Length: 180
Ligand code: ADP
Image 1 (cartoon, rainbow, N blue to C red):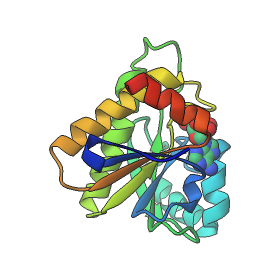
Image 2 (image 1 turned 180 degrees about the vertical axis):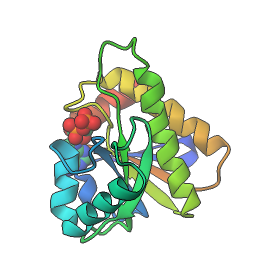
Image 3 (image 1 turned 90 degrees about the vertical axis):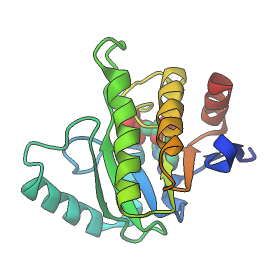
């Protein structure tokens, strides 16, 4: 499926494996332990190598002994991947929508973009946070993700370009149909 440009070309919807993106940062849908897991988290740690987990351990010891809170974001190296950094964020587990899930998911996007802007990164790639193992409905997540990025880019020059990387063309289609 061809890439789709939105928000005057500053948001690009694409399909594939986020570990291959050569952006300033790729975002990891981590869990609060920061010690790796399944899905995109597992793929990022496998591709990036041990340097990422080493840095995550140091972050846990120094800043987040009880784990990274939901909606928060921290940066590490990208290790062996072509991206420069990984921004780890913890999405909400879906509990039906009445437990602050939308605010937490929005915070994941906003905090990740803030970290990228602080690092003066030109571009950043997001997976569809929370829509796998954490069970957030894809259409509902699409609206939250799009609004959060649109809001942030309206008031920030950086990052210049945001990529939404969907693992399958079907997921990209759900996103585009939902926001369209
Ligand atoms: P969460 O626990 O936040 O739900 P998951 O990793 O289970 O995280 O899923 C988040 C999304 O990432 C899902 O839509 C899944 O299909 C997608 N995904 C899994 N592996 C990759 C990958 N290598 N690149 C991009 N997206 C991926």
